[in-house]
Image (cartoon, rainbow over all chains, first blue to last red; front, side, top):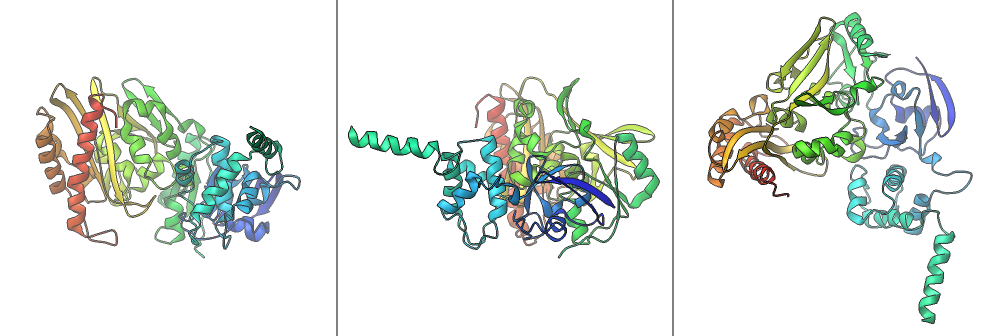
Length: 173
Length: 292
């Protein structure tokens, strides 16, 4: 059946079987392979995408159910060549090893930070409790999210300059 | 890859439209809301449907509000909404206790109370919560509306009183006056898992006397997710620890757990007793305004 939705700001239409899962539509039809396909049982969170601003597990959503809605995938985190601070955080803090859980982790983290800009470690761990890292790299993932919280406009921005300025003042004092 | 067997799909634009679709497509049509119970079963091919009727556009079934002498919860209300509801937090903290340990935040964004209850999994947390609170299920069909007590709604594993061409539209929880507290305790193997065992309770006290009480159990084979003998033991008696312990023992006796991959039967019966006791203690403390 015919389905139309918006994916990362672009309207897409396709003729799909009702049983086609959203994760496969994104990966196989739209070739947006950033969304990963993991456990297939809504446990691991590798397939997390946003529907209308809310993260969901796309292995447990039918493509036809997403019709008429706004989808955001990991490819939509970067805007005009500028990485999201969460993406930068994962680079800065080595928030990934194999990278399989990373797209879902970052989309869940972005949602958390939009709701709660300065989360403590326990809040971060609770927020990503539906995203499993099989490399068990949670320490660095939590640091990556914290980095993004501390740099809401990314690296090399005013936040960093202020931080450097603070250090200089301390030395002078 | 897990792929459901083929089916047809229709999106309902109103409750009347949904009922019409169910009626037209017969008993092998199923309602899908959040889909986090039904879709995994379709993918595993332990369930089959000819038609899926999607009710996600029926936004007027997504609410938590006071309606007369009850809190009315729309069937399409997501777990995340129940967890964060100030109204439920004010009257029945058992909801937030349970929701905090249902699946994970991302799944809670999608799953609904109506879908969870209609799935009727024998380990469903909200079934125990609704049974403890003696909630009422509001069912709509072309013939009209009927109300079914929670303790009659669940008739067995994956079986409910909801008929084909009927939709659960609302869950009604009676508001109880006076000193009322409630709580839910669950043991799970890992974050977000189904319970090994879980118990919940509400208690209404007047001084040291229990004036009303409800106890719900899940994953331990208690018929209709409740323990009426334990409630009977407490009602009208003391809210002291000895009485609570005796009631918890009766709750364990009301359970009939099965040994499976989540644990042996005797351990689950032990949990039924212990978690009932802890829920009762916390509910009594909260009824007396002692937080926690």
